[in-house]
Length: 193
Image (cartoon, rainbow, N blue to C red; front, side, top):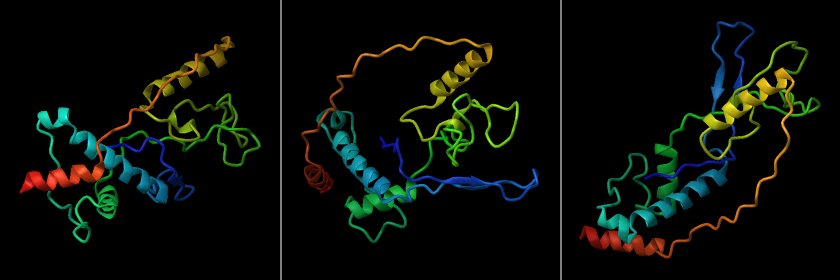
């Protein structure tokens, strides 16, 4: 198991290297540059450890990896600082980058397309209908929302207007774990002896 940061506060950028279409762009993802993202990952790793050491998972043979990650040797194993180092060292993307062509109001200087997905800035006859128009990352797989954007653009081009529908309110309550993180670490150390 490993946690995934669904709503990072860190943002990167893509810039043109030059006016030439043959020069590759400058891509700087800036992963985990916002301190909140690291704190969130550390807390998520603690929850993952708790889940991994829950009785059902233990019956399946779940165990912590006790090999120290290279580069994190200076921190106590499973401490907050160790987990932060682990997040910075082993983190990878799940390949759903978005937001490079932000949809927004025409008077917003950071917007690239308007709500009808038309490219702003004097470009005529060009629309964008992919994940790049999302102003920020959504909390899940981007496939279905991108299909929805494309379907919506198709309806706009055909002149269709669908009636708005209201959705019932969610009564979701997050599950809380009764297992204490420090108890998990103590038990893991006992198991290793």
